[in-house]
Length: 70
Image (cartoon, rainbow, N blue to C red):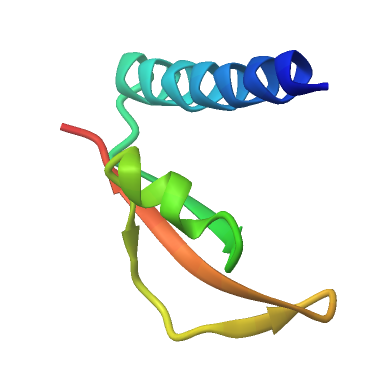
């Protein structure tokens, strides 16, 4: 089970990296997401910023987060 969790974390990072490359290649300036409160530190470690107060979505606490594309 530990190996599966590590692989999932690697996949999440690869998906964020792909989104950033895609955004840059297509002249996007920002990526937004609704991050669960339990996952927001992952996004912070990947250069996303919190741009909202905590709010409920599908009954769970979330933040709106953004990544500026340079």
